[in-house]
Image (cartoon, rainbow, N blue to C red; front, side):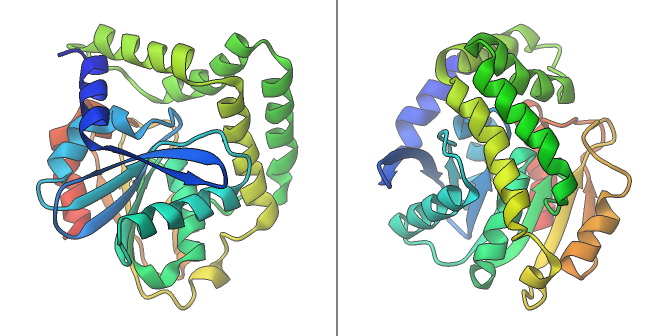
Length: 274
């Protein structure tokens, strides 16, 4: 099957919906075992991770939401609460990849008593200062003013710069990403991407005080060829969480290892979960 056919199959088999404040949230539940709440990256569609999610589900219950175009971090948090409540999950490992890592840090600050470990994959610390707000506001304004096709390129251009499509399935993945961007994402998704990041900066909820009493463990998954990883990220994480951070190497799997090397990625992820 093609990537798009696999996404469709995965969505039909494992997809569920919950309505939160008149917004429909699509999410996927699969597997059995200790629960993992997985937050996907900037392409906003959890089903794109079908291959690694099904491998991960061999030993875990996996919950992975899509991201609708909401405008605030609080809307994400309320929806995440509703999804986990609907599935009867009270305690869980929290994992975020890329953009999902920012959301994961905010959600941990909201619900530290229920998270036993945090895994951040190809993501950076979410404690950016208010100096970043003008840049986020400029991106929001561009997303609202530019033609929709150009606005979507603004979002996806950054995503595609961070990933290297695999050679053997390059065209198939390129086609799948193009269809998701052109046919599924809207201007509102692009605005949401930047507006939620700006809201997170404004609220300053991701701060050392939020994690001071949390007893959990932090693991960071990082690839050598990931251009989004900063040399100071680990030091910032340790300052943010007030404890040592476990760093696990993804080697040369790249920023989107979860999509393009599902077997290798799950091997590393299982080590973080062990």
